[in-house]
Image 1 (cartoon, rainbow, N blue to C red):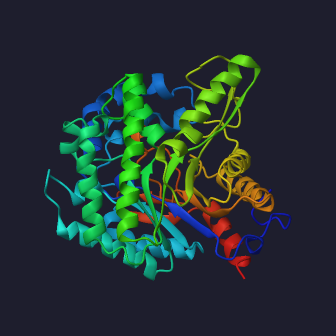
Image 2: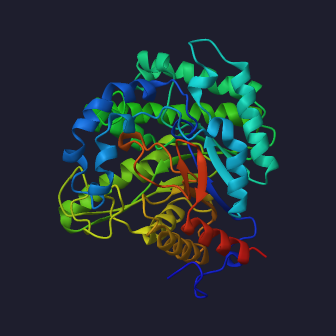
Amino acid sequence: MKLSDPKLPKRSEFPKDFYWGVSVASHQVEGGNHNQWTRWEHKTAARLAATAEDRLGNLPIWNEIKNQAEDAHNYVSGSGVGHYSKYLLDFKLAKTLNLNAFRSSIEWSRINPQEGVFDAKEIEHYSEYFRAMKAEGLEPFVTLFHWSVPQWFADKGGFAKRSNLRYWRDFVHVLAQNMDLSGIKYVLTINEANTFSGMGYAVGEFPPGEKKYLKSLVVYRNLALAHRIAYKIVKNKFPNIQVGSANQFQKAIGKGIGGKISTWFELQYSNWGWVKASKYYDFIGFNYYFTDYRNKLLSVLADSNPTEPINDIGFYMEPSGIDWVLKETSKRYKNIPILITENGVADMHDQYREWWLVETIQAMSRALKSGVPLIGYLHWSLLDNFEWQYGWWPKFGLISVDRKTMKRRVKPSAKAWAKWLGATQQ
């Protein structure tokens, strides 16, 4: 089915105040950042290039990405896609797609480049950034932490040490006191605590590159405490701002006793455990990218996923699975508003994205009809951007970017979605 299919639910069938938007993250799009990821990129780029075929050679697009994946420059974010200076252009592009919401993060390392030092010019930059977003007719969704921290904070042990939460408290307090948040309705404190703690401290593919499972649980717990701290600070200063977080939720299906036990642990860690640990929330935000099928006891990775269709980075694609996540979340946390904070597909040829959007729209429609209090959908991402351990070759964006000229080009799938949004918005 295409987005032009008359059988597809219309935008007018969704609530009038429903948010249709996109998400980006500061380190992935801004360029010119200096944080713990910056150092990590330079430290690991040569190794990732040398091992690219071992890690990625089984992907269906390997022959097309081989040269880029084996180039160390691929793994350095560098100038990004220039969003720090081109944000006005990007907001206008989002509006041409008939979107009404935009999620972005504040770069902690810019605001607080040294211990005890806060940059007033950068605070004003982000104040103006979100004012401009609002002026363009895009509802801002402000993320306080999206995986990047100042290098000095990382050198002190980062979120692995509970005592370091005082630095996080200072950062959030300075934002609340000095940044213009007067036009902000929604703040997200922490993005994907489960991915950040697991990939950085258990799997070792994110900084600091450790493989200590118990330590990853400590980081996870401390991020939940960080959420609670930020929630109280923001609410004390701006009681009308709705505060939540954005963890990675997934649909997980287990077969047999082993698979069901494995699935239970996965859902507790990624989905329901985070909601319990974060404790305070005005809405529940989640990112959805995949469904896991498991047959084995306590398997680290999904062991029974179908082999197709898979996206460019090897995830089994089941966009309709978001229906299950929405309904399960609503069933557990009745009457709490739900926001899809990220959802998208790595698709360099733009061959799956329209199908992905169709399946997702249908799933959201079913969920709303069943009573799920869904308030919005934010697609990942507006722009092709830096994708962490993969570098530059994965393409999640609705808009491609020529990184030599920084010229933006709207993809066919984005035009089709914009037409669906525009044709049915009345």
